[in-house]
Amino acid sequence: MTTIIQYGAGNIFSVAQALKLIGEEAILADTPEQLETAERLILPGVGAFGAAMKSLRRAGLDEAIIKVVKKGTPLMGICLGYQLLFESSDESPGIQGLGLFKGCVRRFNAALRIPQLGWNHVRYRESSSLFTGIRQDSYFYFANSYYTAPTEDIGIGHTEYGRNFISAAQRGKLFGVQFHPEKSQGCGKQLLTNFIQLEEQ
Image (cartoon, rainbow, N blue to C red; front, side):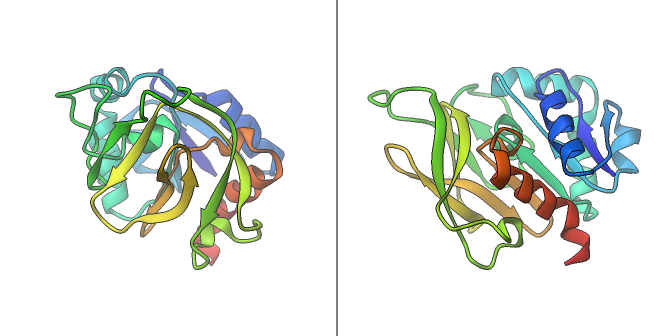
């Protein structure tokens, strides 16, 4: 069973529907107690970094997320949910992120069309179990104006949009993807399946 963190800034129903299509039961959680007993977690997100962090803190979910990740519960952040795993963002100066990944979130060059909206390639690290069964350089669906700039070696997927940026990250059982697997058709379904089967690998 996969728990989706509900905090008012996530595309939770499309994620839940995508999980249902691959035969996975999903529950929505909005309290720290629900997170503490979860088998695995997905942190979705659309909107602004600062507002999302305020929502998490207001519900006490920020500390709960940090706690469950530290004890080894698998978690995957999606889009803004991935960015929230970092220490800070150019989008919301002065707002502290979850700090589970070291580094910050940067805005794309203003000369680009922002947001990046649509399909783009992901070149992944061959050793990554998150991309098992997915062809190299496959397309995934993106909707982002910001990219992550880690200061540690966590990149398992890279994408080109004006620059090369890390579109998928992992440290242990903590994952983050900048794209939307729930909108990425067959490749997205396979990636979600891989995340769910993490304990079996």
